[in-house]
Structures are given as C-alpha cells and as structure tokens.
Length: 280
Ligand code: C2E
Ligand code: MG
Ligand code: MG
Ligand code: MG
Image (cartoon, rainbow, N blue to C red; front, side):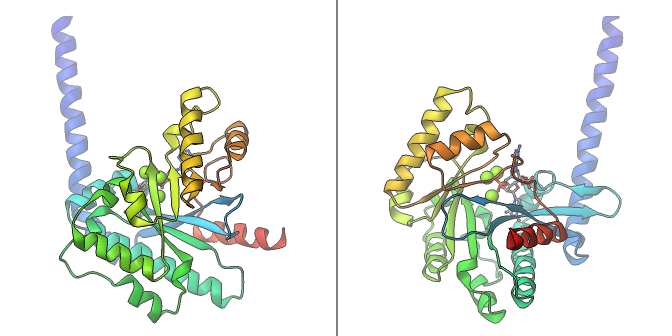
C-alpha cells in the first residue's frame, strides 16, 4: 500500500509540475500578444470616502480576458510579466485605458472620479524607454490631480535616485502618491518624511480580524493616528463586513475599500455606480 501511495504521490507531483509548467509557458507565449490584442481590461473598485475631499474615488485593477481561459486575475500573470520585463508595458497600457475612460466620462458631462493606478517597482529606475505619463496627461488634457499612483513600500525604499527623481517629478505635477499594502513591506518610516505621500492604504491582513484581534485594532489605530499627524489620508483595504466598517469609521479612517461596499466592477458596471452616485 505504501508503494501505491508513493506511486500516486509521484504521479500527482508530476501532474502538478506539468500543470504549472504549462501555465507558465502559456503565459509567456501569450502575454505579449494579449497586450496587442487588447485582451487586458481594466476593472474599477469604488473607494468609499468618509472624509476625503474628493467624493468619487476608485482603484483601477487589471484583468486578462482570455478568449479560451476566461478572466485571469492579476496574481496569475503579473509575476510572470515582471520576470519577462513586460510589467512596464502593462502598467502603461492600464494607464492609457484609464485616461481613455476619464476622457469619456469628462466628455459625457458626468461626475468624474479620481482613479488610483498601481505601478510596479520595476517601472522606476529602468533604462528602457517608456510612456511619459505627464506628457500623455497633457496630450489628452486630463488633469493630473485625477490620478493617484499606488506603489508599495519596497518601491519607496529603493534608493536609486532615478526612482526618487521620477516620483518627485510626478508629485510636483500634482499626481497623488499612495503607499499600497501599508504595513506588510520592508517598513522604514523614513520615507514618509522624505517623500510627502498623500495616502496610506492599510493592508487587508490588518483588517480581516479587526473585530476579534486587539493587536490588529491597535495597529490600525496607531497607523491612523500617525498618518493624521503627518497630514496623510488613510484608506483601509479589504473591508468585507459591516462590523469591520463600523470599527474603521470609529477609528477615523478617511476612506474604506472592500467587498462589503463593492467588488471590482467592469467599466459598464462602474458607470452604473457613477450614475447612482449622481442621483443619490
Ligand atoms: P492591490 O493593489 O492591493 O489591490 C487590491 C486587491 O484586493 C485587488 O485584487 C482587489 O480585488 C482585492 N480586494 C478588494 N477588496 C477586497 C476584499 O474585501 N477582500 C479581499 N479578499 N480582497 C479584496 P486584484 O484585483 O486581484 O489585484 C491583486 C493585486 O495585483 C493588486 O493588489 C496589485 O498589487 C496588483 N495589480 C492589479 N492591477 C495592477 C496593475 O494594473 N498594475 C500593477 N503593477 N499591479 C496591479
Ligand atoms: Mg493597489
Ligand atoms: Mg493593496
Ligand atoms: Mg496587494
């Protein structure tokens, strides 16, 4: 029996290996053409403002709408995209799609949301020629204050002066800077002093058990208190229940994001949300 189990375990292992290898190969083969075939699409997750100045706010999140495999989440292809050196192209593509959408919403005379865009660390300090976001915003006449850049702590920690210079340049042009997944990275708080960030997005791992865990509550309270004194807005990620929302409101977070309010929406779903906002 032990031999049988060993045998099946071996087969299982091989199958797993083959499956993951196949998955990797398909991504490597098809990701580049996915960009040119416009299979990458942008979803928008509403961010609920409690006391942000801007009422309408959402995060742009990429998905791969594969003709055969269906909707593929970013966690299944962004790591490969980073290794293949394609992440810059993807971020630029998402940025352009967001600008297109902002242009459409502006032209239709409706309320225009502020959009947060994730930008990978690999974009900073690279030598490759890539889209100049400020020039592009000017070209399509989208006000740069509609755009927030979400970057992780590790990106902010990069000491390459090129990364810093680019961030400063974007900031000087009124693009907002948000620290994504705050609290999970390689956290030296010194960048908060140096970089003058606008938002901290508290990672959802601190929110998930906040109704049970005194520790998580203490951490979120301390982050919020610190942020307020530094004049930084706090957004809580991954809010899934009414109880969590209530606790976070009482703590004084400025905005909440999570499935309790809305999952990420397709463009047309998001437009319905925008309209309901106007009427309400
Ligand atoms: P993120 O920037 O921290 O985005 C939030 C993620 O949490 C999204 O996952 C969102 O769907 C998910 N989320 C939101 N509310 C809840 C909730 O209440 N509960 C739970 N469990 N999850 C929630 P998604 O869309 O799968 O994206 C995963 C990550 O992929 C993002 O994390 C971001 O790091 C990256 N990403 C997504 N789009 C882009 C992009 O265009 N460029 C880059 N560089 N990265 C991106
Ligand atoms: Mg994000
Ligand atoms: Mg996050
Ligand atoms: Mg994340």
